[in-house]
Each structure stands twice: as structure tokens, then as C-alpha cells.
Amino acid sequence: MASAPTTVTVTGAGGQIGYALLFRIAAGDMLGGSRPVRLRLLEIPQGVRAAEGAALELQDCAFPLLHDIEITDDPLTAFNGANIALLVGARPRGPGMERADLLAANAGIFGPQGAAIGAVAADDVRVVVVGNPANTNALIAAASAAPHVPADRFTALTRLDHNRAVGQLAELLEVPPGEIADVIIWGNHSATQFPDVSHAGLADGRSVLEALTERLGGADAATAWLDDVFIPRVAKRGAEIIEARGSSSVASAANAAIEHVRDEQLGTHRGWTSAAVVSRGEYGVPEGLVCSVPVVSRGDGEGYRVIDGLGFDARGRARFEASVAELVAERDAVRALGML
Ligand code: NAD
Ligand code: LMR
Image: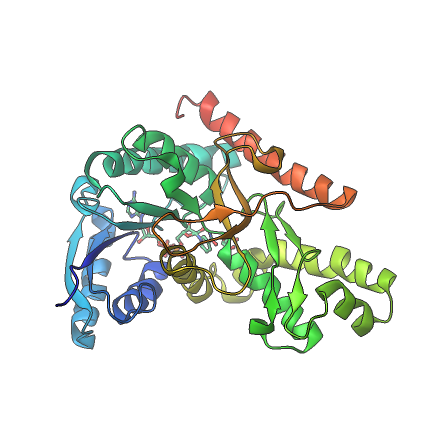
């Protein structure tokens, strides 16, 4: 007997990432090849027509797993019975906008959406926030969904940063990306993030640090490459993409969102991945902040679990603390606006 469809809500479905996401979800890339999906697309009124256009094309693909599509500008309709929600729609930074303006504009979106999730989503709902500033938007949505939905059902996307880090290492070390394990993104999805390779390894048994030392001709050269090239390149890759394309990352962001949900739902396989999850105080991160850490999932419905107790060197610890301090400042700015 065919299983009941999983209700997947996508916000900002008429936008660029939405367009890249919907076809992959409907094709089964996110939940596997045997789980039918019911898509609920949320847009603001000006975006509804674009979402309707995407729905026409989805119909024209005749995906066997796509049960039905509903398009709405009403959050209560969009999140009704949602098992999985991808919160993509967000207010982008405009000319002259300060970070606090961006936080306030997005709190006005993610607060009501969190409340709607709390009111009408399915009991097992899991939410990933993609729209920026993703970590703090997730914090706001989780707070607004309480007490109806446990905060740990909310996560924010740092899988794109994780994949970017793997991609940079794969290029330099001339190995396939799939042979690199246990890279970590710590902190915020912003330029303060700390991409960390100190626990990473290769399929041939070498650590990434050993391989970098061999490739670059010494430990000092490896450290210099990590400090001067790798960390800034990964942390500022979003800006590099914007510079090259004229708009922010789309297909890679959609791919990362698919992989984030797929691994959370079906399980991680080799080593850990990175996701921003609600802190329970691990690594000294203030409780409740949505902070990127190493995680695994067993695919048992319990979601991501934090890999706790890893060590840092002093410089790594300082980088991580700087990113956590930025998350604290974002939380405090939203609180000062009375939105948390
Ligand atoms: P986009 O402007 O093409 O699309 C955004 C869509 O959201 C638009 O169609 C808009 O109408 C809709 N929208 C705005 N407010 C909404 C609301 N209240 N409810 C429902 N829909 C709403 O932008 P995009 O390129 O798709 O990017 C979306 C977001 O993802 C941006 O915030 C971007 O910065 C962020 N992003 C995050 C990552 C990450 O790794 N976390 C990566 C890339 C982009
Ligand atoms: C990205 O990482 O590509 C996005 O968050 C866009 C940005 O502003 O960097």
C-alpha cells in the first residue's frame, strides 16, 4: 500500500531558491523515492503568480511522487498539517538598510510564521530556515511557535557553508568531495562563521591537516592557507557568488536545503554534517541560540543530535566565540525591538 503523503510547506516558493527547490522535492531527492509529497506553497500576494507558474511546470513534469500542490498567501493555510517546512521567503537587505533594519523586517515575517506553525502544523513538524539572517530568523520562529512546538524542531541552514568548505578542500587536495569527512561549520551563517578542518579526515586514512601539510610543503604553509585562503573564502563565498552572478546563490542553496532535510529525515551516513540547531549549552553556547555545530541523525524521527565534547585550539576557540558573540548581538537587537 502506498504511504500517506508527507506535507511539505515551502515559503518564498515564487522566488529563485523556491524555483530550484520545488522540482527536486517533487522528484524525490529530499525524502527518497517512495515517499509521496503534498506541496503547500506560501507567498506574499505579489509572489503568488510566480508560484502558480512553478506549479504549472511541476504539473508538466508528472512526477509520480507529487500528490498535489496548494498555493496561498495565508500562513495558517500554508502550514496546516505541515510535516516539513522550509522557510525560504525573507526580506532581502535593501539600499541603506542597517543590520538592525533587516532583523526587524524579518522578525515581522518569521514571528507570524512561527506562530502559524505552532497553531496548525502537524505534531511531528520539522522546520529549516533558509531566509537570512537564517540563525536569528529560526530563533524568532521557534520562540513564536512555543509552547506548541518544541524549539528543537527548528534548525537553520549551514549545510551550504559545509559543502563550500568540502568543495575548497577537494579542489586543493585533488580528491573527490565524497572522500572528505567531518568538516565543521561553527557559529553563524555569516562572515563570522568558523569553518574548521581540525577533525576532518580523508577516505585514505589521512587527516585533512596531514594531507594539507603534504600538499603545501609544511605545517606552516598549511596553517597559512587555512587562515588566509580557506576560512575567508568559505565565510565570504556568499558575497563572491553575488559578485559573480549579480544575485545570491540559488541552486547550491537549494541543494544544501535538500541535503539538510534529507539527512535529518533519513540519517547521516559517513561522519557528521553541520547544521544550526537550538543550543542546550553545548560548547558554552548560550541556551536557546541557533548555532551551527557538528551533528548526526539516525533517521529515526528524532532529528539532529549534536556531537559534543570536541576540542578546539586557542585560535579556533576565539573564532567560534566571535561568531557566537554575533549571534548574541543579533538576539539582543531583536529583543530590544520587542520582537522576541
Ligand atoms: P528571492 O527574492 O528570489 O525570493 C524570495 C521570495 O520570498 C520572493 O518570491 C518573495 O515574494 C517571497 N517572500 C517575501 N516575504 C515573504 C513572506 N512573508 N512569506 C512568503 N514569501 C515571502 O530570494 P532567494 O534568492 O530565493 O533567497 C531567499 C532567501 O534565502 C534570502 O533571504 C537569501 O539571503 C537566503 N539565502 C540563504 C542561504 C543560506 O545558506 N542560509 C543561501 C542563499 C540564500
Ligand atoms: C549565501 O551564503 O550564499 C547566502 O546567505 C547569500 C548571502 O548573502 O551571502
